[in-house]
Image 1 (cartoon, rainbow, N blue to C red):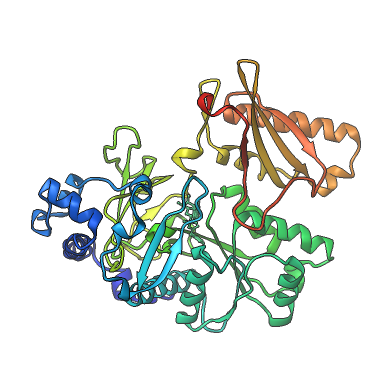
Image 2: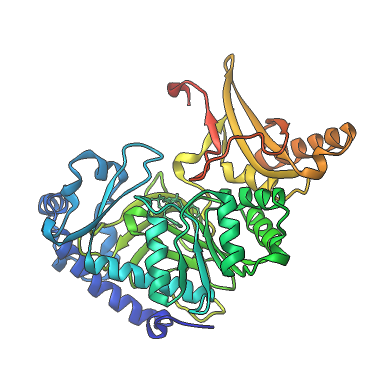
Length: 436
Ligand code: DLL
């Protein structure tokens, strides 16, 4: 088992908490340099002196995405603009995009965090790392790029899309590690099959770093089996730099969140009360090492729990469960709460289904109607009608058992659902806004 910074990765909990407190106090002073926090802290009488223990963090107000969007982006800037060397803008899938500023020191620290993640996953300088995600404002490309270089890995900055070229790169340069988002990983397997490439036999792949959108354990297993490699889950968000916040170790029992860089809280999204380990709630993060744009108690809207107990790898930084979706992903149909991830975990665990699906929600008179459109697997597609009827029945039944409502199921020919090279759109909600 390799460590990037062993001392800090296996640090005793009480020492880690001492470090967190020290850094939190520095962060409060640093944040007070920004117009937003200066105003907030002055109004509430908050200063670094009011933080005597880590528990005092909970007395501080939460910061929301709406706060980031409501004023001018530079209201969150805690250094002079001359010190800023990079500006990332979040994907804005759920509203106005938000800006995140970085100084040279922030970028340096971010690269270190990502190198730490990759090293933990077992990536070494002998690997060839094909970075198959977007290199623009999206933080996935540049984030992993500089982290992998920091580790000394050979980086192929392939960027997103152009599947044929991606496969050729893998073949020609013996790519051993890929960075890919889950929906594209599923799609690319189909393209490999179309080109007659068997990744298990013809490629040298051993690790896939997979993140940026929610995916189920069933999808992880599918990617692992079809490519013949180990998938490590990677979680992050632009507001917290991007990737490099939390990552699987090879035990794959949860994502170690780097608590020397972030303070992790899980809260009930309705009551805002803290939740104990094991209970699912909203992930709230405080940056501890950010210079340009410290964020205090940032509500991510992502749902997860803290996994109780120690990890076999020896790292003391607590583990996050697989992300279960976002608070704003939840669909309410006929009074039942449904997460798209529940649908995915049913569909991707079956051999009758292909690699793409979409959930469509409509209004049928006064009633909500949910349709799950899923591609058939190649073998089901070429099977008799009777086999298709049976598969249809089976999928409908399994979805009913999981969701407690009965969605309509449509089996679609392989390759006939829209796909994107970026984050997948899994839900199309056609209901009028006020009813949704
Ligand atoms: O997606 C950063 C990233 C890039 C993470 C590459 C991992 C790999 P944003 O575009 O700001 O940043 O989107 C962040 O994506 O709040 C989650 O809702 C979701 N997300 C990210 N990673 C995971 C994951 C990047 N492993 C938002 N599982 C986050 C589930 C994830 N959801």
